[in-house]
Image (cartoon, rainbow, N blue to C red; front, side, top):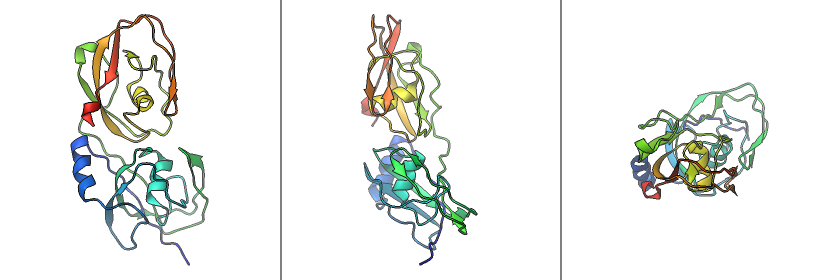
Length: 214
């Protein structure tokens, strides 16, 4: 049986907006044929089944598995908005974020994930003078910024990479809130959630994440 291929657009919302969507959005599965758009929810840990492509993906790909592969959501799941776009002559497979996709030939429609701008500024850096700081991390399946310590973190640590280490954020987009704490004489390295932090000596200021934002 021929596949029907459609396109996926994924929108992430602020914490309040996400909660509102989660109350009404159905659980994701396959994209319904002929549907112009669909809002659905991926459960935590969902990896679904077969996916073709690396983004764009074929429309009969499992939505949650494709979203995990792309990095627009992490193991924590989340809400996505799905819509149709043009197809490609070929779809190549790959492995990333714990999901392996397959290759395929030409299809009339494609799937892709789009993350629009958030309603708060993107995380750039931290200063104790800005505490509490609320900022947005874009989706990134390969966060690799430098982080020192294992909570508290040095004030110059990369915020989004530290957020993934701490478990406040996965590889998808999200909003975080930082609180200033006193500097430490020593920061200890650790590995967690796919992120390895580094050790450091004395630093003048630290930050932790405010879990109450969630």
